[in-house]
Image (cartoon, rainbow, N blue to C red; front, top):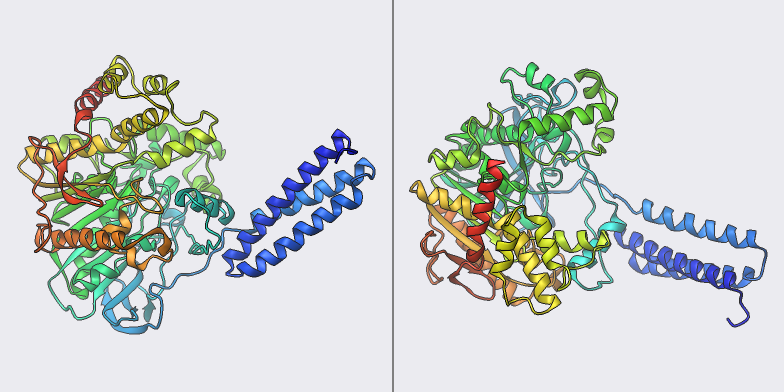
Amino acid sequence: MKNLSKGQLAYLIIHCILSAIGFVALVFFMDMLNLRVFGIVLGFIFYLAMVAAIILIIRKRWYFKLITIIVGLVLVVAMIFVSGPITQPLKAAEGNTTQTGVLTVEGGQIQGLVNEDGDVEIYAGIPYAKAPVGDLRWKEPQDVEAWEGVRDCSYFAPRAMQESTNWFVKSFIDVYLEKQWRANLKSVPDIPMSEDCLYLNVFKPKNVSADAPVLVFFHGGSLTSGETSNPDYRGEEFAKNGIVFVSVAYRLGVFGYFALDELKAESPNHTTGNYGLLDQVKSLKWVQDNIAKFGGDKTNVTIAGESAGSSSVSALCTTPLAHGYFKKAIGESSSLVVQIPPHTGRKQEDAIKMGNSIKAEFSCNSLQELRNIPADKLVKTNYENSAMSIDDPYTFPKTPYQVYKDGEQNEQILLNGVNLNEADCFLIPQLLLSGQGLTKLSNYEARIKSGFEGNYAQQVLDLYAGKINSNEDADKMFNQVISARWFVYPHESWSTLAEESGETVYRYVFTKENGYMGTWHSGEMIYMYGNVKNSKKPYRYNESDLKLSDSMSKYIMNFVKTDNPNYAGAAEWTPWSSGTHKVMEFGDNVSMIDDPFTFLYSVMKQYDEYLATK
C-alpha cells in the first residue's frame, strides 16, 4: 500500500466499493428468487473476480483501470435494475385450497376458493365496474360488463396503476423499517399492474348463509399507491369470526384524481378530480346489491380505511352519493374533517391547475390525446395527484368539515384513532435524504417556525418551554408536533364535530413498539385485522404482539357486529368525550388513558381556523 500512488489508491477504493455494492445487489436479487445461498456464492465469486482484477492491473496503464471501473459500474447498475420489480399473479390463499361453489353476482357467475382450514371462502378479483380504460379514462365508473361462463376468482386482480420501486431499493427500505439487518429478506413479488383495476375481494365465512355483518376496507397509500392483497389487512381472520370482509381497489394518482375543465364540461354530472372516490361509491353500491349472495347483511355495513383510505372513509361519510350505503365507519390515521386538510384534500381549482400542467407536460391539446397516452407512460408524470377535490359540487356540495358541522354525516357510529409516532417514518428519511439531518437542539426552533405561519410557531414552542434539554428531546418534540399537525388533530376535529351532532364516538391511540413499524404510520393494521400470527417475518413480533393483536381485533370485530367494541373479560372501551379526552390505548397496556396529544389541540385548532381565513 505504501508504494501505491494517490491515483492508484483512489482507484483501489472505488473498485472495492463497486465490488461490495455489486456483491450486495447480487445477494438481494438471488434472495428474491429464493436462491439466497446460491446468490451468496455467486456474490463472493464476483467479488473475488473484481479484487483479482485490481491486483492484476493496479500498475497498468490508466485506460486498463478505466475499463475495469466501467465494467464494474455497469455490472452493479445492471444488477440493481434487473432486481425488479418482479411481478406474478398472487393466489388469494396459501396452502391446500379447494374450489367454492358457483355464485351469481352482477355481471355473471364466479367461483373462488376455500382456504386450507376449510372455514373461509375467498372470491378475489370480482369486477364491480366496467374497466376504466380507453374513452372511459377519467369518467365516472360505469356498470360492470357482463362476462360469459364462470369467472375464476382465486387470484387477486391487478393493482391500480402506480409507480413501482425496484426490489433492491425495497429490500433496503425493509432493513430501515426493521431497524436492523436481516440476512433473509424473502420479498413477496408485486402482483401485476393495470389501468383495468376496478375489482374487489370478498372473504366469506364458510358456514354463514345470511345476516352476517359486513366490513368494507379501503387501502391507503397517499391516493397514489396501494393494493388489496397486502397481508397486513387480509380479511381471512375476520371471516373466520363471522364477518363478511370486502377489500376494494380504486383508481389512483393521475388516473384517480386528475382534473381538467374539459373533463368537467363533458361529464353529465359536471364533475372532475374525484374518480377514485366515485369508484369507492360504486363499490359500496355493488355491496348493497350483491353482498346477500355471500351471506352479508346490507343493513349492517361498516366502512374502514387507513391513511388515504381513512381520508376516503371521511369523504364517504360526507358525500351524499354514499348516503344509505353503510352504518358505521372506522378511520385509521387520516381525516379530511378539518377546515384545511393537511393532505389528501385540495380545492378543485388547484387540481385543475395541476391537470393543465400535466396536459402541457405530455404536449397534449385534447382529451383524446391525453386518453391515448399509454398508462405506463402517464403514470410517470412529474406531478403527484394525491388529493381529492373537496369542493367539487357533485361529490361534495359541502366540504367534509361543513357536513359534520351541520350534523349531516352518513354514518351513525364512528370509531377512529392514531398511532403515537405517526410522522416519524416520513420525517426521518425525508430529513436525512435531503441532507438536513435529524432534528436537534440547535435547529428544532427553526424547524417549528418553518412549519407554522404567524405567531403560531411560538405558541407551539411555548407548550414545550423547559422540556427540551437534549437532542433526543428536540427530535421527539418535532416529530410529535408534526404528527399532531398532519394526522392527530384531524381526528380530534372529526371526533369533536361528530360528538357535537349526537353521534357515538370511540377513539384509540396505538402505542405498541415491535421489530418493525411499531408506532409509526400504518403500524397498527396488522394488529387490528388479526394478522400478526400470519406474518411471514415472525422475528418482528413476540407473544405480547400476538396477545395485543388478538385483543385489538376482537374489539374491532365486536364493533362491526354489534355497534359496540366491548367484549367479556376485556377492559371497557368507553365512548369518547371532548370533556375528558379519554382514549383506548392499544400497547403493552390496553385500557383507557388520557389522550397524549390533548395539550396540542388548542393551537392546532386555532391554526386551522387561521388557514381557513387566508
